[in-house]
Length: 348
Length: 263
Image 1 (tube, each protein chain N blue to C red):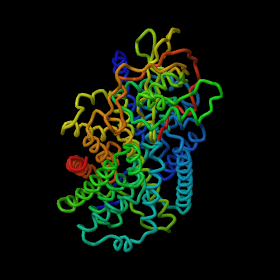
Image 2: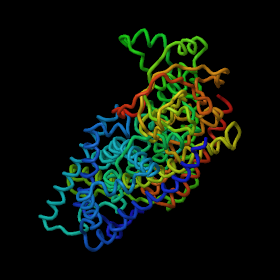
Image 3: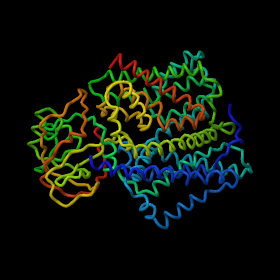
Image 4: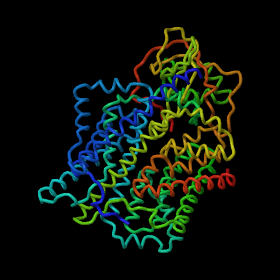
């Protein structure tokens, strides 16, 4: 395609967009909040520019790549908003209204039992991956065994009924694809939970959620919802910006070099799932179109995507600390690929 | 394991309230116009309104509690504070003000060209029977046209005999007598868009810029060889975009729903 070269040179503009916009928002924040708590000057300046010259900025940013970046970034953020809100509300309910003793009784005391139960419980939260991060963070905060909460974190977006139905619609006449996705995802979530409970050091998981200590139930609810939303939302925005950059600058034709079957193509699609960060309710439709890849490779795309992607890595690091994300996400990625390979070669 | 609150640099409650309200207002404002359809499928709209409204309510509750703390004479350290990363949620506001958000178009088609499409089931004869076109040339969505063009021999023959109207945007392909007509198809949001493409031949007008919205009337020209099917209904449509022989073309406005949603 001769026009490819045009797109590639334009693509160079892409990475500057998030890079420029990021510091402009983030930079003024630390002094503002630490010493002189004022609404940052940069924000007022941005508002003033927009009010007095509405077309100045839009003219500046009207190349194909920048517009592509902005649309993908905003759509990822907006799309996540209802799911994030659901997660934050559930998290606030757990924090403010559910007594710790009730949570302790709800799960089996032995971790080896609690982990699979938490995995199956994930099927009950019909949200995207954005909902489950604040909920899992809050569960750990309220004393649920980390391994169980982490299994829930992985299973919820991967095996809930909405995702299963979407997969069945995207692969008509192939119910084994739905079964394979369910089994491989649950196996990955439970395996990671068990491995974590057996080998993880206590200080790998940092509690970064703020505590709702005092006041009434109502105040505790508002406080938890506020801090959880800002925290999860902030990291979500960071991840969405990265994803938009990759979607804008990476031509998908690079995929064709690794198409086919075999381990290399599986790994390629698993990495693609991490980079594209497509919502678990829509990824089956994209996977169905990747016909140059084997079904097992596409299974890896569907198993890894809802558990590890750029958005989620950012949110994991934000909720449980960087040390956690550095260990947990590679472990989950590897387990997901192996589970897909095993289940795929047995079922597909 | 929990670090004491005071060690962390935090955000003021009033700033947090402003950020939450800002994002909530952005969501509700976008959802109140058709601009939201450049980002999400239409069925998401009520959920955006709901979650945006909840954010505004939450922001008000935070603002009220901040004001009460102030009146009660509480200073910093009291009450719950938010971490600085929360400032990042101002980024969607800044971006939506700075960039005139357009629906994805030709740029994305070129980027996504390696992606195949899983087409929904479609029966052209059935569609023509059940939809009234009142003497007009029937209008098909691009995914319907592609499904028929990649259907069995009967579907293809029937499609070739039936002139149709198609609406999409132009992607220049460098040839003198034609261009690619494209739409994007989305599942949830524009982040999962994949391209639908047909090759239009027999165009003799002046050059058309990328992303020009047009309605073409024409007929399907079957390929000599049928495209291979991998057995699960999905096909690679990049190298074998079906060909439409053009009979007429007119420019149209971008539709309110710029994407197609077969599922």
